[in-house]
Image 1 (cartoon, rainbow, N blue to C red):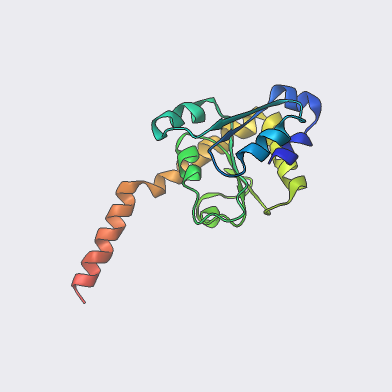
Image 2: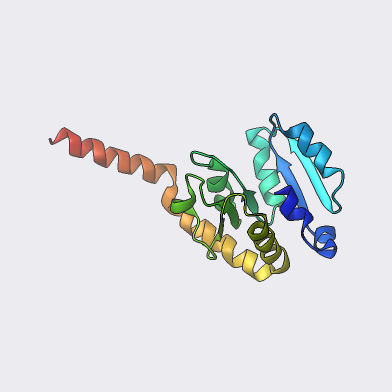
Length: 162
């Protein structure tokens, strides 16, 4: 993600920030690599669950360039907040949640050029961001906990009759 952001034109990087949320082994390396990149890059580190809505409220989009993620709950959360999602095509939730070019972009894992293209399109087109955000919010309505519970109850009821 950092490499893709660095490839954006300088005028885009001066207007668009990149915020990393979370902690892990790669944080120090990420901080080191960030030092040489112009633009607005911030590393928040760990954020309490209760503080996440504030992060989403400041965002124009959410990117999850995962190389291996079973689901990626951050995608559900971002969509609930009306944000477009940029997502690696191997994320577990990719097929269920992101419709390429409708509510975000599915990007081949590790394809820095395509990540840069997607970042550019999102950064330079507020109308596209808005439309994708509305589409995200509409799509995630089918994934509410109450709907999941109803589906589970229906399955349990069916099993009782066997």
